[in-house]
Amino acid sequence: MANTKKFPPFFFFFVLFSCCFFSTSSSNFAPEIKVQQDKDEPYVGVNIGTDVSNLLSPADLVAFLQLQKITHIRLYDADPDILKALAKTKIRVIISVPNNQILAIGSSNTTAANKGVVPIDNSLFKPLTPSKEMVDPNTLLHYTNVLDAMIDSVYFSMKNLNITDVLVLVTESGWPSKGDSKEPYATIDNADTYNSNLIKHIIDRSGTPLHPEITSSVYIYELFNEDLRSPPLSEANWGLFHGNSTPVYLLHVSGSGTFLANDTTNQTYCIAMDGVDKRTMQAALDWACGPGRANCSEIQPGESCYQPNDVKNHASYAFDSYYQKEGGSPSSCDFKGVAMITTTDPSHGSCIFPGSKKVSNKTSEVVNATQPSGANTIRFLGAQTSIFDKNVHVLFGVALCLFYYSLIQVQLS
Image (cartoon, rainbow, N blue to C red):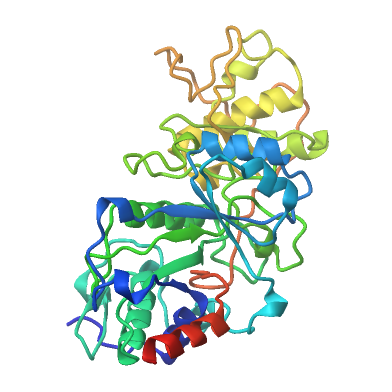
């Protein structure tokens, strides 16, 4: 039998006050929500915070949005330069009301997770066996993910108030890719899984168990890592991209339309980051060629990737070898924070990187763990996995609670 636990009251209050509601005049709506037509196709937008030390200029930001086929954004303040750059671009913009002007309510359903209410598999849109599905004891509807359950709780609540023509817009939902020691689930793998599956869920017009004909649009939290945010560490690591527009990880949304199409590819590489001190980089290189068992034969003296003979160049090759060996898993391109994923082939001259389509069919022996990589080495103790202390963090956005209250009054009058 499926789990028939009753959804905790927390779900109701969080979604009710953290979703943004909208409606047109009653003359344009039937008494019930109509099936979405092509012109009402659900979309995925992004939130853009500006607590970023190296944020793109407004013009470059708009160019980046257009490159990534992002057509809906949400800003946290009315930055005049950004708004001016967005003019005549056909990118739709939502501007939030400052927090000090709305009722402070809700946070995220991590609160429920901390109490053991929400298993992580129910949060990541992963396939579930019937025994793991959540079942509403009142309607007997089966839920395979928390997002749908929370959205439907809003529809049920509005229906109890005789409001049946209001669509739900989710203004924030996301997952951080890194956290501190008390945040064991803030990992690149979980962030990639959640956001990739969230995008597919919306673009595929999956609907919800209560309203399979209606799919809520969602704004992902968020576009950039906001490195200037205060602790905990996860607060600075919700972004799909770093502030300079390089991806934090590569989403797996092939076949889901054009949204973020330039952030996804079947060919990715792991390379060393700029600005890392040589000692730290050398330690990571030593681990990759040693315990990590990357194939470092091509960066030995006289081989095709030995030149240029510097730690960063050698580390990039070793990192990519390890990354490809691990199947391109995002978590395998970390090396204690000195590596990054890129879609640009780092091969140069006769040096062909392991992940390149140009790579030859010749086989090479894996360098023995005790053999140096071609430079003096320092023992690397291993990369630590990024962590997140909550089983689930489907972070919905701030809501205009007073607006919602007034909306109820209008609808009931």
